[in-house]
Amino acid sequence: MIQVREVRKSYGPLVAVDGVSFEVRRGETFGLLGPNGAGKTTLLHLIAGALTPDAGRISLAGADDPTRPEVRRNLGVAPQALAIYENLTGEENVTFIGRLYGLRGASLREAVARALELVGLTERRRDLASAYSGGMKRRVNLACALVHDPPVVLLDEPTAGVDPQSRNHLLENIQALVRRGRTVLYTTHYMEEAQKLCDRVGVMDHGKLLALDSVDGLLAAHGGRSVLEVELEAERRRFETDAPVNELLALAGRGEKVRSFRVDRPDLEAVFLNLTGRRLRD
Image (cartoon, rainbow, N blue to C red; front, side, top):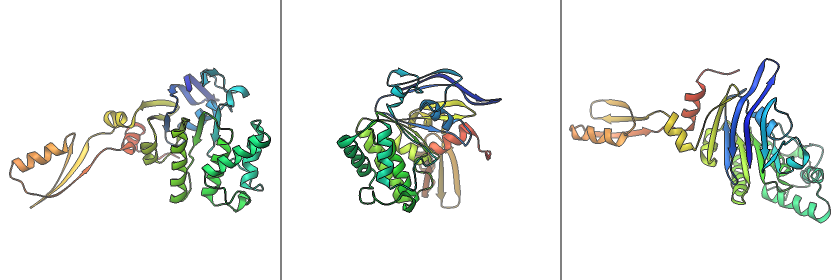
């Protein structure tokens, strides 16, 4: 559904996207991770047709060049910066976007009602967006992206700055989209979200795609070893190991009495830090 081939984009001397290639399969949730300034948002703008690549090719649902309106109709985009009008109601916001996609009459009313119901805003649809909480504004943002029922949805940090309840609701919305066969490309700084939602994950930094695999594949290749902490009768010990169970059996075989133990297995955050480094980014 999304094909990116050797795409490059520069701003003067700054190379924001540097020869990136990948594809997203139909019905897949594809996560894109990276530090601030890694090139993720620029790449999403290129896929959405808001920017034109300096080199390379992008296709959506088999059609090249997402700057063309007929290709862009396959997309729904929920940007990180909220794209809603606060002096309109939630319903008016979604209706306006639906009209931009050519919906009219009963089809428009049904599409707006369906999108608002999906994000849980039916009862508050006639309230001004300025009266919404941060989480509700995020949900209107998502409804605007979905009103025309696109086969491909781009979500840029969709849960940024929202409370746990709103965040959980948004994640459930995304899972519901995938169950309906939609293809989702998802950027986030929340590693547990990507680990929970995504079929595959790409890690970007300095404009390049450093790694791409399933979560399990990334953990195996870049996560590092498990850490086993054991409390014995006389001391505590710490092991870095690929086989914590074998270490415990070895301790027992040597007559050590294990009072308690804890295993910390590598997660997606470990993968992220191992690939992009631990230095602070401004």
